[in-house]
Image 1: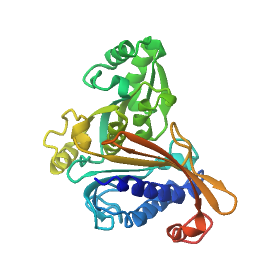
Image 2 (image 1 turned 180 degrees about the vertical axis):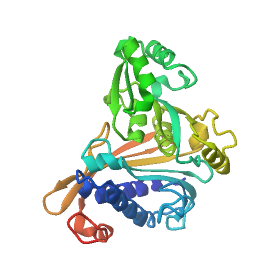
Image 3 (image 1 turned 120 degrees about the horizontal axis):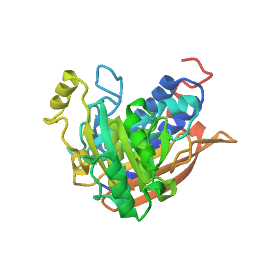
Image 4 (image 1 turned 60 degrees about the vertical axis):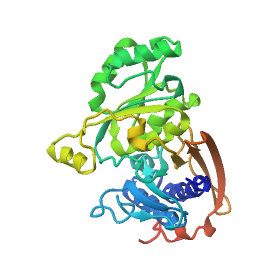
Length: 329
């Protein structure tokens, strides 16, 4: 892939974040997601690529845009797979909570896993633990191994997971061994990436969350030198059939990094909507300006760029075309 693509796609997440930001704290996750999706789709047309959405807002019959199989980009440039989450953490924005962001990943055509919209069991770690742990182990064994590798006491580890009833057994075990727990209300991508950022203070991420979010996290972790292991969790025969139809002949096989994002290059970009573990949120400034905080990474070079931008909003025509709070739809 061309290096210029990295800086092009961050403009996509910036606009999606700017579109979602006015909905922060308004209790309306649907309009927040719609605004981010419309903005992202509009900006994608300006990107020099021939992209196909492999992870998006759903199937064609349930999503008007950014649906799986949709062609995006200027239709000039490299052929790529595109995975998007225009607003990762819709509920976070609606409630004014941290860790909401706009996310995109791009890889050469045929490299990104076509992950169905279902749960995935996950184990995500940073560079120090990459290749050292196994999702096959019980959680007690996992934290004991992690402590040994990191030269820490088990009681000094911090494990992050979604605050869900389905994680009751994991939480019970972690508390029995004395490991610290940091809960997420939402924001599965940010949570899985967090162990790769020392400043986040997270040693590993465990539990189950969305499979599409797992692939997006895998793209970021490949750029960061971390690792994620996953296993799909189909809940019924229909979900089993859906996996098979999407090319996953063994729906419950262990999925490693190469299974999710391939063995070639991948680019990941995210822009914060609300403040999070490693990104600031959108800040509205005087004079019709707004500030965004983004990260853009590429696996081939392992370059990580943080971009702080100020935007003059009247010069963003796509934003003006969106339905915003206080205006008539």
